[in-house]
View (cartoon, rainbow, N blue to C red):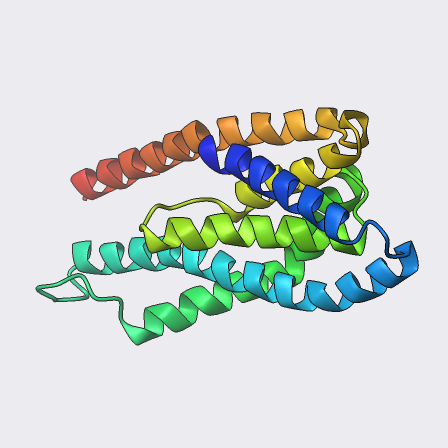
Length: 198
């Protein structure tokens, strides 16, 4: 949670500086045209790594619940195919229905992104997610891509990033974990209370 936005910032910043150097003699319209097409590849990469990280977390929790509830009997922790399908469908549906709002915040409110900047941010964010998934470390896609977007925005000038928006996002991240733990604890307390009274 803490490391991924920072690493995303650094990777995307380094990537955008390298791209700006390589394409320094190319016209803006040509660069936008090239990276407009390359963004299809970078967004696909980010989407796949998003599924590898967030999908694993979701599937792990569902499988653990199935085992705890006695609905799944297994000697080794193996994710059943229906759980994979349900998790993939839920993430796809969630991204399809609510993704535009997140994209709007990231690409327009946090900073204004040109195609080459979007490519670098997506590639940087995807690289973090892929490496973390390889080591089995759960990382939030939002944290990784937010850090990457701030990195590409800061490459122009620090004021190009709307740090107030970034600060509100960080506050939301900090509140989310203890708030979800408190809600989960309260739900468990209610369930125990109800099962004991029956």
